[in-house]
Image (cartoon, rainbow, N blue to C red; front, side, top):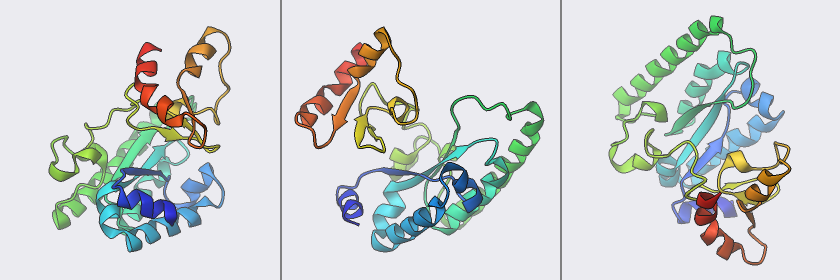
Length: 214
C-alpha cells in the first residue's frame, strides 16, 4: 500500500502485467490470479482517479491463452480497468499455426464488440490498440504514443524480480541466459543497477547516452 500511495501521489503511469482469467494467469504463475485480482480492486477503491487515468493492464497473447483472450478482456472491463494493452508473446511458439488465424480473428471480433459497447456507454476506448494517438487527455495511454521499446531513451525503466533496473524489460536478466564475449561487455553498460546501490542516480541519468552508444 505504501508503494501504491507513492505511485498515485506522483501520478506515475503504471502498466500491470496480468494475463486475465485464472486459467490464463495460472500459465504465467500458479496462484497469482487472486493476488492480482485483489490488487486491482484495492487500487480502484483507494486511488480511483489515478486508477482510472494512469493504470493499465498489459496482457500477453500466446497460443495457450488465445481461447481465453476475449473473456479476459471482459473481466478487465468488469474490474474497471480503463486501459488494456494486448501484446504478443516473444520467442518461439510452434503452436501458432495458420489454422488458428480464424480463432484469433474471432477473439478480436469479440474484443472489438466489447470495446465498441464501452465506447458507446462512456466515450472511453479501453483497448489501447484501438485508440487514436491524438486522444486528448490520455495520450500517454494511446496506441501510438509509447514505442515498443524505450531502452534508448530510458523513459520506461523496467525493474526485474531481484530489484535490478534496466532500460527495457527485454534487457532483464532473470528470464534469459546472459551472452558471453564482446556482446556481454556492451550489455554491461546498459545495467542501471539496484536502487539502493551507491551511484544509482548518476547511472540512471547517464543511461540514455550509454544506450545510444551501445
